[in-house]
Image (cartoon, rainbow, N blue to C red; front, top):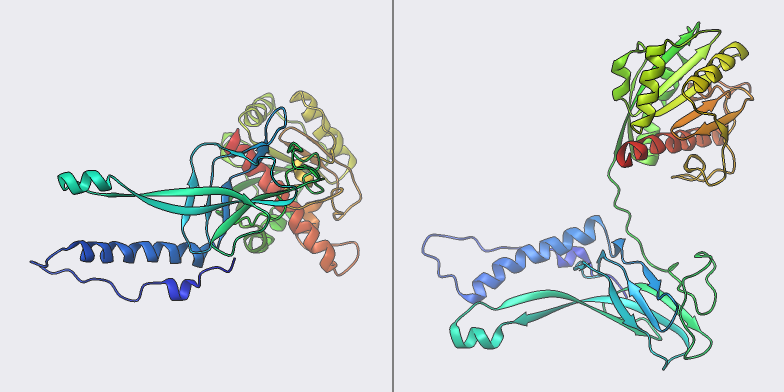
Length: 371
Protein backbone atom coordinates (compact mmCIF):
# COMPACT_ATOMS: atom_id res chain seq x y z
CA UNK A 1 0.00 0.00 0.00
CA UNK A 2 2.68 2.48 -1.09
CA UNK A 3 1.69 6.13 -1.09
CA UNK A 4 1.58 8.17 -4.24
CA UNK A 5 4.68 10.32 -4.58
CA UNK A 6 3.38 13.87 -4.04
CA UNK A 7 6.31 15.26 -6.02
CA UNK A 8 5.17 13.48 -9.18
CA UNK A 9 1.51 14.07 -8.38
CA UNK A 10 1.89 17.84 -8.18
CA UNK A 11 0.71 19.49 -11.43
CA UNK A 12 3.42 21.22 -13.43
CA UNK A 13 1.28 23.46 -15.59
CA UNK A 14 -2.18 25.02 -15.73
CA UNK A 15 -4.33 26.64 -18.36
CA UNK A 16 -3.89 30.38 -18.86
CA UNK A 17 -7.26 31.87 -19.80
CA UNK A 18 -7.75 34.63 -22.35
CA UNK A 19 -10.75 36.52 -23.68
CA UNK A 20 -12.65 34.59 -26.29
CA UNK A 21 -11.02 31.25 -25.39
CA UNK A 22 -13.28 28.32 -26.31
CA UNK A 23 -14.11 26.43 -23.11
CA UNK A 24 -14.70 22.86 -24.21
CA UNK A 25 -15.39 19.95 -21.89
CA UNK A 26 -11.72 18.92 -22.16
CA UNK A 27 -10.51 22.43 -21.29
CA UNK A 28 -12.91 22.64 -18.34
CA UNK A 29 -11.82 19.20 -17.11
CA UNK A 30 -8.12 20.03 -17.41
CA UNK A 31 -8.57 23.31 -15.53
CA UNK A 32 -10.32 21.61 -12.65
CA UNK A 33 -7.94 18.64 -12.68
CA UNK A 34 -5.13 21.06 -11.86
CA UNK A 35 -6.83 22.11 -8.62
CA UNK A 36 -7.72 18.51 -7.77
CA UNK A 37 -4.10 17.38 -8.17
CA UNK A 38 -2.80 20.37 -6.23
CA UNK A 39 -5.18 19.62 -3.36
CA UNK A 40 -4.21 15.95 -3.27
CA UNK A 41 -0.52 16.93 -3.34
CA UNK A 42 -1.13 19.30 -0.44
CA UNK A 43 -2.83 16.51 1.52
CA UNK A 44 0.17 14.23 1.09
CA UNK A 45 2.83 16.94 1.56
CA UNK A 46 1.42 18.28 4.80
CA UNK A 47 -0.48 15.35 6.30
CA UNK A 48 0.34 12.04 4.60
CA UNK A 49 -2.00 9.09 4.26
CA UNK A 50 -4.07 7.92 7.22
CA UNK A 51 -7.00 8.73 9.44
CA UNK A 52 -7.43 12.40 10.26
CA UNK A 53 -10.25 12.10 12.77
CA UNK A 54 -12.85 9.57 13.91
CA UNK A 55 -13.64 6.43 11.87
CA UNK A 56 -13.54 4.31 15.03
CA UNK A 57 -14.95 0.80 14.66
CA UNK A 58 -17.37 -0.44 17.32
CA UNK A 59 -19.24 -3.69 17.79
CA UNK A 60 -22.98 -4.23 17.92
CA UNK A 61 -24.71 -4.41 21.28
CA UNK A 62 -25.28 -7.32 21.81
CA UNK A 63 -22.28 -8.50 19.73
CA UNK A 64 -22.93 -10.23 16.40
CA UNK A 65 -21.40 -10.20 12.90
CA UNK A 66 -22.11 -6.48 12.45
CA UNK A 67 -19.68 -3.65 13.18
CA UNK A 68 -20.18 0.09 12.84
CA UNK A 69 -17.74 2.63 11.45
CA UNK A 70 -18.28 5.98 13.14
CA UNK A 71 -18.12 9.33 11.28
CA UNK A 72 -14.67 10.65 10.45
CA UNK A 73 -12.23 11.64 7.74
CA UNK A 74 -9.13 10.09 6.18
CA UNK A 75 -6.62 10.73 3.41
CA UNK A 76 -5.87 7.79 1.13
CA UNK A 77 -2.38 7.09 -0.31
CA UNK A 78 -3.19 9.11 -3.46
CA UNK A 79 -4.18 12.16 -1.44
CA UNK A 80 -7.94 11.73 -1.85
CA UNK A 81 -10.01 12.91 1.10
CA UNK A 82 -12.57 10.36 2.34
CA UNK A 83 -15.36 11.63 4.59
CA UNK A 84 -17.93 9.57 6.47
CA UNK A 85 -20.58 12.02 7.61
CA UNK A 86 -22.67 9.43 9.45
CA UNK A 87 -22.17 5.95 10.95
CA UNK A 88 -21.87 3.08 8.49
CA UNK A 89 -22.86 -0.51 9.30
CA UNK A 90 -20.84 -3.39 7.87
CA UNK A 91 -21.74 -7.08 8.07
CA UNK A 92 -18.64 -9.26 8.36
CA UNK A 93 -20.70 -12.36 7.67
CA UNK A 94 -19.77 -15.87 8.76
CA UNK A 95 -17.80 -17.09 5.74
CA UNK A 96 -14.28 -16.40 7.00
CA UNK A 97 -12.22 -17.25 10.05
CA UNK A 98 -8.67 -16.30 10.89
CA UNK A 99 -7.37 -12.80 10.24
CA UNK A 100 -9.65 -10.28 8.54
CA UNK A 101 -8.89 -6.67 7.60
CA UNK A 102 -11.54 -3.94 7.44
CA UNK A 103 -10.63 -1.00 5.20
CA UNK A 104 -12.05 1.98 3.38
CA UNK A 105 -11.15 3.28 -0.09
CA UNK A 106 -12.09 6.25 -2.23
CA UNK A 107 -14.60 5.86 -5.05
CA UNK A 108 -16.31 8.26 -7.40
CA UNK A 109 -19.32 7.84 -9.64
CA UNK A 110 -21.08 9.83 -12.34
CA UNK A 111 -24.76 10.57 -11.78
CA UNK A 112 -27.50 11.87 -14.10
CA UNK A 113 -25.66 10.42 -17.10
CA UNK A 114 -28.80 9.23 -18.91
CA UNK A 115 -30.70 12.42 -18.04
CA UNK A 116 -27.78 14.51 -19.29
CA UNK A 117 -27.91 12.85 -22.72
CA UNK A 118 -31.65 13.52 -23.02
CA UNK A 119 -31.77 17.10 -21.76
CA UNK A 120 -28.19 18.38 -22.04
CA UNK A 121 -28.18 18.66 -18.23
CA UNK A 122 -24.85 18.62 -16.38
CA UNK A 123 -23.40 15.37 -15.12
CA UNK A 124 -22.15 15.16 -11.56
CA UNK A 125 -19.17 13.32 -10.12
CA UNK A 126 -19.98 12.09 -6.62
CA UNK A 127 -17.17 11.54 -4.12
CA UNK A 128 -17.95 8.24 -2.43
CA UNK A 129 -16.22 5.50 -0.46
CA UNK A 130 -16.17 1.73 -0.29
CA UNK A 131 -15.87 -0.25 2.94
CA UNK A 132 -14.81 -3.85 2.59
CA UNK A 133 -13.20 -6.70 4.51
CA UNK A 134 -10.59 -9.13 3.24
CA UNK A 135 -8.11 -11.73 4.58
CA UNK A 136 -5.33 -9.48 3.24
CA UNK A 137 -4.88 -5.78 2.64
CA UNK A 138 -5.16 -4.91 -1.08
CA UNK A 139 -2.21 -3.25 -2.77
CA UNK A 140 -4.53 -0.53 -4.04
CA UNK A 141 -5.07 2.73 -2.17
CA UNK A 142 -6.93 1.76 1.00
CA UNK A 143 -6.94 2.87 4.63
CA UNK A 144 -7.08 0.19 7.31
CA UNK A 145 -9.85 0.78 9.84
CA UNK A 146 -9.47 -2.32 12.01
CA UNK A 147 -8.61 -5.99 11.94
CA UNK A 148 -10.11 -9.02 13.60
CA UNK A 149 -9.03 -12.57 14.32
CA UNK A 150 -11.82 -15.14 14.61
CA UNK A 151 -11.34 -18.71 15.77
CA UNK A 152 -14.70 -19.68 14.28
CA UNK A 153 -16.51 -18.31 11.26
CA UNK A 154 -19.68 -17.51 13.17
CA UNK A 155 -17.91 -16.01 16.19
CA UNK A 156 -19.34 -12.60 17.14
CA UNK A 157 -17.15 -9.51 17.06
CA UNK A 158 -16.77 -7.59 20.31
CA UNK A 159 -15.16 -4.33 21.44
CA UNK A 160 -11.73 -4.95 22.95
CA UNK A 161 -11.71 -5.02 26.76
CA UNK A 162 -8.09 -3.84 26.61
CA UNK A 163 -7.53 -1.90 23.34
CA UNK A 164 -3.74 -2.40 23.66
CA UNK A 165 -4.12 -6.18 24.00
CA UNK A 166 -7.14 -7.25 21.94
CA UNK A 167 -8.01 -10.93 22.02
CA UNK A 168 -9.47 -13.22 19.40
CA UNK A 169 -12.92 -12.05 18.38
CA UNK A 170 -12.25 -8.46 19.49
CA UNK A 171 -11.79 -5.34 17.39
CA UNK A 172 -8.10 -4.49 16.94
CA UNK A 173 -7.46 -0.84 16.02
CA UNK A 174 -3.75 -0.76 16.92
CA UNK A 175 -2.58 -0.87 13.30
CA UNK A 176 -4.54 2.16 12.12
CA UNK A 177 -2.33 4.93 10.78
CA UNK A 178 -3.43 8.13 12.51
CA UNK A 179 -2.47 11.56 11.23
CA UNK A 180 -1.79 14.06 13.98
CA UNK A 181 -3.18 17.44 13.01
CA UNK A 182 -2.52 19.72 15.94
CA UNK A 183 -2.85 23.45 16.08
CA UNK A 184 -0.70 25.37 18.52
CA UNK A 185 -2.36 25.96 21.88
CA UNK A 186 -2.16 29.51 23.23
CA UNK A 187 -2.01 29.57 27.02
CA UNK A 188 -1.79 32.78 29.02
CA UNK A 189 -0.49 32.74 32.59
CA UNK A 190 -0.57 35.43 35.27
CA UNK A 191 1.86 35.00 38.17
CA UNK A 192 0.92 36.55 41.51
CA UNK A 193 3.26 36.64 44.52
CA UNK A 194 1.78 36.38 48.01
CA UNK A 195 3.25 37.06 51.47
CA UNK A 196 6.92 37.94 51.27
CA UNK A 197 7.70 35.99 48.11
CA UNK A 198 10.14 38.55 46.73
CA UNK A 199 12.01 36.08 44.48
CA UNK A 200 10.27 35.87 41.10
CA UNK A 201 11.16 32.22 40.46
CA UNK A 202 7.74 31.12 39.22
CA UNK A 203 7.45 33.79 36.54
CA UNK A 204 11.10 33.51 35.53
CA UNK A 205 10.86 29.71 35.36
CA UNK A 206 7.71 29.64 33.23
CA UNK A 207 9.14 32.24 30.86
CA UNK A 208 12.35 30.22 30.55
CA UNK A 209 10.40 27.20 29.27
CA UNK A 210 8.42 29.01 26.54
CA UNK A 211 10.77 28.04 23.69
CA UNK A 212 10.98 24.37 24.67
CA UNK A 213 7.22 24.12 25.16
CA UNK A 214 6.68 25.56 21.70
CA UNK A 215 9.01 22.99 20.12
CA UNK A 216 8.09 19.85 22.06
CA UNK A 217 4.40 20.34 22.86
CA UNK A 218 3.17 23.00 20.40
CA UNK A 219 2.14 25.24 23.28
CA UNK A 220 2.54 29.00 22.93
CA UNK A 221 2.88 30.28 26.49
CA UNK A 222 2.48 33.96 27.37
CA UNK A 223 3.58 34.84 30.91
CA UNK A 224 2.75 38.09 32.71
CA UNK A 225 4.89 38.13 35.84
CA UNK A 226 4.28 39.84 39.17
CA UNK A 227 0.67 40.76 38.40
CA UNK A 228 -1.44 42.48 41.03
CA UNK A 229 -4.10 40.19 42.46
CA UNK A 230 -7.18 41.91 41.08
CA UNK A 231 -9.98 41.35 38.57
CA UNK A 232 -7.54 41.60 35.63
CA UNK A 233 -6.04 38.18 36.43
CA UNK A 234 -9.35 36.42 35.87
CA UNK A 235 -8.99 36.54 32.09
CA UNK A 236 -5.91 34.29 32.01
CA UNK A 237 -5.87 30.57 31.22
CA UNK A 238 -3.75 29.91 34.32
CA UNK A 239 -3.18 31.83 37.55
CA UNK A 240 0.02 31.01 39.42
CA UNK A 241 0.03 31.89 43.12
CA UNK A 242 3.56 31.77 44.55
CA UNK A 243 3.52 32.12 48.32
CA UNK A 244 6.14 32.56 51.02
CA UNK A 245 5.43 33.45 54.62
CA UNK A 246 2.05 34.37 56.02
CA UNK A 247 -0.71 36.18 54.15
CA UNK A 248 -4.49 36.25 53.93
CA UNK A 249 -6.69 36.59 50.86
CA UNK A 250 -9.39 39.22 51.06
CA UNK A 251 -13.05 38.18 50.68
CA UNK A 252 -13.09 39.91 47.28
CA UNK A 253 -10.05 37.90 46.11
CA UNK A 254 -11.59 34.65 47.35
CA UNK A 255 -14.85 35.42 45.57
CA UNK A 256 -12.96 36.25 42.38
CA UNK A 257 -10.95 33.01 42.53
CA UNK A 258 -14.07 30.95 43.16
CA UNK A 259 -15.79 32.50 40.14
CA UNK A 260 -12.63 31.94 38.10
CA UNK A 261 -12.60 28.22 38.97
CA UNK A 262 -16.34 27.94 38.27
CA UNK A 263 -15.70 29.43 34.80
CA UNK A 264 -13.14 26.71 33.98
CA UNK A 265 -10.03 28.59 35.06
CA UNK A 266 -6.98 26.80 36.49
CA UNK A 267 -5.04 27.83 39.61
CA UNK A 268 -1.50 26.68 40.41
CA UNK A 269 -0.64 27.23 44.08
CA UNK A 270 2.96 26.83 45.20
CA UNK A 271 4.40 27.43 48.65
CA UNK A 272 8.01 27.88 49.76
CA UNK A 273 7.62 27.34 53.52
CA UNK A 274 5.20 26.03 56.14
CA UNK A 275 3.48 29.36 56.94
CA UNK A 276 2.68 29.79 53.25
CA UNK A 277 1.39 26.21 53.07
CA UNK A 278 -1.01 26.85 55.97
CA UNK A 279 -2.25 30.07 54.38
CA UNK A 280 -2.81 28.43 50.97
CA UNK A 281 -4.72 25.57 52.61
CA UNK A 282 -6.83 28.15 54.39
CA UNK A 283 -7.50 29.78 51.01
CA UNK A 284 -8.59 26.39 49.66
CA UNK A 285 -11.00 26.00 52.57
CA UNK A 286 -12.46 29.44 51.79
CA UNK A 287 -12.88 28.29 48.18
CA UNK A 288 -14.68 25.16 49.47
CA UNK A 289 -12.13 22.85 47.80
CA UNK A 290 -9.99 20.15 49.35
CA UNK A 291 -6.94 19.13 47.29
CA UNK A 292 -6.19 15.40 47.31
CA UNK A 293 -3.35 13.22 46.10
CA UNK A 294 -3.28 12.89 42.31
CA UNK A 295 -5.06 9.79 41.01
CA UNK A 296 -3.22 7.81 38.34
CA UNK A 297 -6.00 8.65 35.89
CA UNK A 298 -5.73 12.42 36.39
CA UNK A 299 -4.96 14.32 33.13
CA UNK A 300 -1.98 16.01 34.81
CA UNK A 301 -0.28 12.60 34.87
CA UNK A 302 -1.40 11.45 31.43
CA UNK A 303 -1.87 14.19 28.84
CA UNK A 304 0.08 14.71 26.69
CA UNK A 305 2.96 13.04 28.58
CA UNK A 306 2.74 10.00 30.83
CA UNK A 307 3.90 10.15 34.46
CA UNK A 308 3.47 7.63 37.26
CA UNK A 309 3.86 10.46 39.79
CA UNK A 310 4.69 14.19 39.72
CA UNK A 311 8.39 14.67 38.90
CA UNK A 312 10.89 16.06 41.43
CA UNK A 313 11.16 19.82 41.78
CA UNK A 314 13.61 22.00 43.64
CA UNK A 315 12.32 20.75 47.02
CA UNK A 316 10.74 17.63 48.41
CA UNK A 317 7.09 18.39 48.89
CA UNK A 318 3.55 17.29 48.25
CA UNK A 319 1.53 17.66 45.07
CA UNK A 320 -2.24 17.71 45.56
CA UNK A 321 -5.08 18.56 43.21
CA UNK A 322 -8.77 19.15 42.92
CA UNK A 323 -10.88 20.22 39.96
CA UNK A 324 -9.04 23.12 38.34
CA UNK A 325 -6.49 23.56 41.16
CA UNK A 326 -2.96 22.22 41.69
CA UNK A 327 -1.32 22.58 45.12
CA UNK A 328 2.45 22.09 45.21
CA UNK A 329 5.27 22.21 47.72
CA UNK A 330 7.94 21.05 45.27
CA UNK A 331 8.93 24.61 44.32
CA UNK A 332 8.69 23.93 40.60
CA UNK A 333 9.24 27.64 39.99
CA UNK A 334 12.85 27.35 41.12
CA UNK A 335 13.32 24.13 39.15
CA UNK A 336 11.83 25.72 36.01
CA UNK A 337 14.27 28.58 36.49
CA UNK A 338 17.11 26.03 36.32
CA UNK A 339 17.93 25.83 40.02
CA UNK A 340 18.68 22.45 41.58
CA UNK A 341 19.89 21.05 44.88
CA UNK A 342 22.23 19.03 42.68
CA UNK A 343 24.20 21.33 40.40
CA UNK A 344 23.91 21.22 37.47
CA UNK A 345 20.31 20.11 36.81
CA UNK A 346 20.36 16.75 35.03
CA UNK A 347 19.09 16.40 31.47
CA UNK A 348 16.51 13.86 32.62
CA UNK A 349 15.19 16.24 35.26
CA UNK A 350 15.02 19.14 32.79
CA UNK A 351 13.06 17.06 30.28
CA UNK A 352 10.60 15.76 32.88
CA UNK A 353 10.02 19.33 34.09
CA UNK A 354 9.20 20.52 30.58
CA UNK A 355 6.82 17.61 30.01
CA UNK A 356 5.16 18.13 33.40
CA UNK A 357 4.68 21.81 32.58
CA UNK A 358 3.19 20.85 29.22
CA UNK A 359 0.68 18.64 31.05
CA UNK A 360 -0.25 21.51 33.38
CA UNK A 361 -0.71 23.98 30.53
CA UNK A 362 -2.61 21.49 28.36
CA UNK A 363 -4.90 20.83 31.33
CA UNK A 364 -5.54 24.55 31.70
CA UNK A 365 -6.16 24.97 27.95
CA UNK A 366 -8.55 22.00 27.85
CA UNK A 367 -10.54 23.38 30.77
CA UNK A 368 -10.86 26.72 29.03
CA UNK A 369 -11.89 25.10 25.77
CA UNK A 370 -14.45 22.68 27.16
CA UNK A 371 -15.64 24.58 30.24
